Length: 447
Image 1 (cartoon, rainbow, N blue to C red):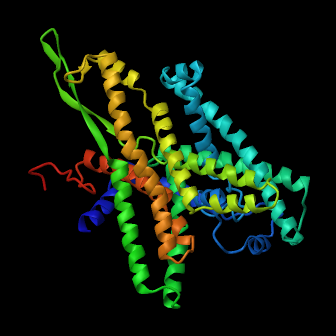
Image 2: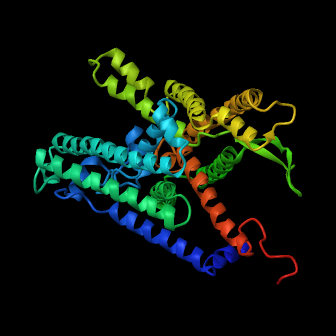
C-alpha cells in the first residue's frame, strides 16, 4: 500500500505526466456532465416515472451500462462511445474483406489517416441511426404510459428532428473528447470513456446493497459470498486478459563493415484472448434479434415457450450465448491477427522460429498454435460472460443490479482498461527513474 501511495505521489512530480493525468480527468468530468443534460423538451422526472426505477434488461441494459445511465436519462450523450466502437469494428472487418481497406492498412500514416476519416463518417451515420431509434423508443414510452407530460414542449416529428440533431452532435463531441484524451492525455481515450460509464454505476449499486443489508433484506453471509465472488471473478478476468503463449524467435546475425547486427533472441506473445471483449458485445447484439422476432409471432403456446427459452439467464439462452461468443472469438481473432503478415515481417528482418523455415512453414505453425490457444481463451471468455451473472443473481436473490454492475462484460472491460492505463503510467515513471506500481525504477546506488 505504501508503494502504491508513493507511486501516485510520484505521478504529480513529473510535469508532463501530471499534465496528461489532469487533462484526462478534466475530459472525464466534461463527459460526465454531458451524461446528465437531458434532451430539450423532456420532462426527466416524468420519464423516470414512466420507465421505472429498476435496472434495464437485455441489450438495452448492457447499452445503458456502457454509457453510464445516460440512455435511461435521455441525455445528449446517450449514444455514448458505442457508435465509434461499432464504426471501428466495421472498418476492421472491411479490412479483412475489401482490398481497398487492406491497402490502406499497409500505407502507414497516410492510410491510418484515411481509415480514421472513414471511421468518423461511419460514427456520425451510426449515431444518426441510433438517434432515430432512441427518439422512437422515448415516444413509445410516452404513448404506452399515457403520460404526455414527458413532452411538455413539443412531440411528434419536431421532437424526432431535434433528438437526432442533439444526439448526433453529442456523439461527435464524445468522439472528439476521446481522441483528445488519446493524444494529450494518458491511456486510450475511447476505452477510458467506456470505463467511466461502467464505474459510475458501481457506487449506486453498492450503496443499494448496503441499505438492503441494513434493512434486513440481505444477510451478511450472502454479502460475504458476493464479495468473495467479486474477488474471484476479478482474478479470473486478469488471468484471461494477461494470459499468453510465448513463441521463441531468433534473429540471425548480420555483419555490416566492422559492426555485427542481430543475433538476439526474443519471443512472439500470442494472447489466449486476442479478441478482448468484442465477442461478448457481438453476441449480445445477436441474442437480442430473437427477442425482436418473437414479438411478431401471434399469441399462443409457442410464443410463450420461446419467450421462456430466450429470457436472459435461462439454460437455452446461456448455451446459445456461449456458443456464439466462442464463434465470434475465433472470427474476430482471425480478422485482427494475420499469421502470414507476421511471418513475412519476421522473414524481412531476419527472424525465424527455431525448427521452422521462414515463410509458409512459420505462418502455418503460428496459425496452428493460435487456433489451439484460442479454444481455452474463447471458452473462458464465455464462462466469464455467463457465470458471474448467474452467480450474482443467485446470491442476490434474483435481482439484476449487482449482476449487471459486476458481470462478465464489466469485469473484462474494467480489468483491461485499468491494466493498460497503469502500464502507460508506470512506463513514464520508470523512464524517469521513479518507482512504479510494480517495479522499481531508481538506479542502483542512487538514493
